[in-house]
Length: 302
Image (cartoon, rainbow, N blue to C red; front, top):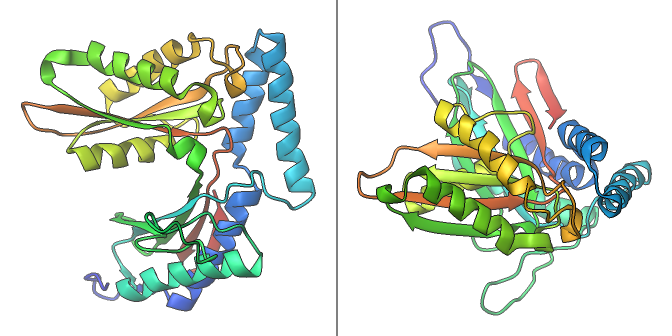
């Protein structure tokens, strides 16, 4: 895709080969190195947890993170469904079809060359091509940013344990905020320890059914410490986090205060006669990695 450029401003040109290499490296990096905000989240929970068993479980999780990084090993055996979020700046030139193919090639190379366990199968035959790719996988979400000459590629491996903790309810306006809270708390109870808590609960509110689920995943994979840009959504994040952590589910569902690192909310405008609400849960191994392409080169981070 080529966007209109300002007079005298050369566009940033991103080659498919660079995208492919970045996709490969980010998949491996995301599986091995936990973002700093999640490590800090563990430290906060460890300092505030009052249950002895929960503290022991948190200590084991923290040690697992350290062992994985020291031994250059995977944080979890589940390599997940590969998800790539692409943010394209205003003055960036990239072939959209070539970008899509490059991400798939990078994903397959990471799986075969590392090697990684492929967790992707055909939904009916259950055939595994051992490539972490398949029909419409990797999942690729493309959006645009007002940054002048920047393209950001974010990789999120979403494991089945947390992805199975996905819920959608088509509420109506009469259900109000109380209905939203009730649905989210009920979803946390239904998920229990199956989603490997402590978790990040992502909540989508509004839009259509499909957009609402996408919002929930966007929320679940946001960095800890970030806030919903909508004031009402931000206030709901605080209330829901308090409610979820009062359930006593605790780390791995064995009791305690530390059920969730946070509850994140994302909102979208919706129809006057409906109010969809979705929950998507991210497990304690909240993995992600990113590459930012600029005129100065490629910056790798989270």
